[in-house]
Amino acid sequence: MQPNDPQVRWLKEPELGWTGKVYLPLFVEGMRTTLRHLVGPKLTVQSPEERHEIPEPLIYRGVHRLNRDEQGRVKCVACFLCATICPAHCIDIVAAPSPWPDRDKYPESFTIDELRCIYCGMCEEACPVQAIELTTLYDLTGKSREEMIFDKEKLLSVYDQTKDAEPIFQSWPLPAVSAEQENAQKK
Amino acid sequence: MPLERSELAESSAEPGQPQPYVWRMNFGPQHPAMHTTLRLILTLDGERIVDAVPDIGYLHCGFEKLGESLDYNQYVVVTDRMNYVSSAANNVAWHEAVERLLGIEPPRRCQYLRVIAAELARISDHLVCIGAMGLDTGAYTHFMYAFNPRERINDIFEALCGARFTTSYTRVGGLCRDASPKAIQMIREFCRFFPSVLRDLHLLMDRNRIFVDRTKGIGVLSKQEAVNRGCSGPVARASGVTRDLRKDEPYLCYRDFDFQVCCATEGDCFARYRVRLAEMEESLKIIQQAIENLPTGPVNLDPGYRVILPEKGAVYQTIEGLITHFEIIMPNRGFQAPYEEIYAATEAPNGELGFYIVGQGGDAAYRARCRPPSFIHYALMPHLIRGHMISDIVPVLGSLNIIAGELDR
Image 1 (cartoon, rainbow over the protein chains, first blue to last red):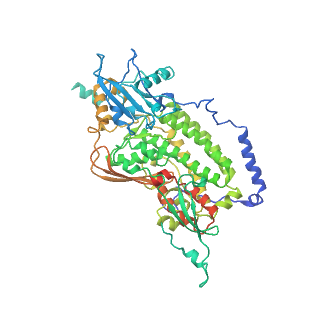
Image 2 (tube, each protein chain N blue to C red):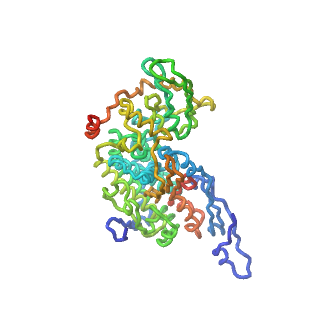
Image 3 (cartoon, chains in turn blue, brown):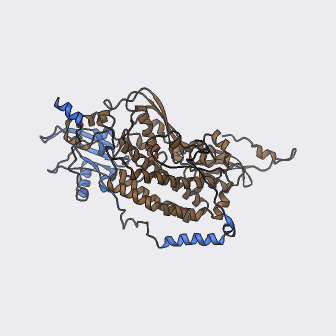
């Protein structure tokens, strides 16, 4: 860009003027600004008595949970997509032949190292059966490292704890089929 | 590292007389005014700085090496942690480079949302910078008034992508999720609310004589020096360099928006402060235009490109969607980058943030080099503070806005 381009806005230095040099009038002005904030709304959230209000609970990325299906079984089919996409390599799955007829595999153990996890939400995106989700629980603490390595039972218990507040999103819209794809299908 | 005797120190001694007492002091790495783990080895003559040597590397995390093992989507979580004050701008910069490497262009709606995220990040970064600059020069209220609106920006990011700070917002050819109506509503409210914040900041500091006396004429960077030393962003623009990548090399959809590039001629700390304040106004204009003209349509590229995961509805209900979904995530079936190298730069809040990527066929880069603005700007420090007092380091550092995560990577 050239210096004389109309898209360049040259900033002028503010004039200090006699009011600035005398200091007192600007002191009054600053004080007025500060006092106006005294009566304004308070922004501090008195945690933990008050909870921070999460604007979109369904997309918030907090502690994981493993979802259950209608019969109370774990939904996961041990496809390892979440473990593959995880940038922090914090998911460890041991698959076993499923005892149920509707799937081939199920996770014998499913462990998430919550200390290693960076809460990026990629496991949730990668899951093809909506088995793993991130909840709104954000204040996760523990007294030992072992406590923070969540196994399958603990992840399922997080589901039991949060299922009422955050139900599994049920109806996904079918993808819009474009005219070209329709023609291709007809052929 | 060895310190050479500076010319300034020698000139003050008469020939044949003993040298003046010059002593060394460590400024940082743990010092409240150094914000993060920055360290300066100062050579002092009394309280006057004769020379300074920046010592970096205290926050080195090996981010560039990680880029060689994480794939193009996974690496976005690392870019969050580079400039952690404006992580969305880093996400946008990284995927801008990746998309140029792959030769794809995201849909219009995605571009607009990325612009909104990047400009919100710019406002957030500038608020930190000028707030912290006020804090370091003794204006605690100014700092609080600058930090409170950041809370709203964090809330917006929370509604956009689910995280307040480490956003990981972008994906190759799209975004992690489309903006919800509530998020758009929040951005609109922010646009209405933010001018009052700017007015407060202007009122408190623009003509505050204490602040002006501490920043005016301190750390002067001439236009010539700014160009020679590779400055970019607000630091260069405050010295009169009329360069903004959003105008000079437009990326995303910046051509669509009407905004101005803010420049000043003085090149001192006060000019950098004013440029950042004015840039927030321009960013606000961009956000307003983008949110009112937000295009409809898909936010992600068509699954036919095989770069981004298909819609969830397709994954759960159609076999083609499920196969595509698996293939994109599987390491040996994912998308193929060409054997090419690319450098793509974006105008990050601190300056030119560029990524140099060498593709090696697979879904991870052979080399993912980052050109961080903080690294170049921190090299300016000795030049800017030489001859000043120790107390002048603080506003100079504040005006450069050095983020150690980005500096050391």
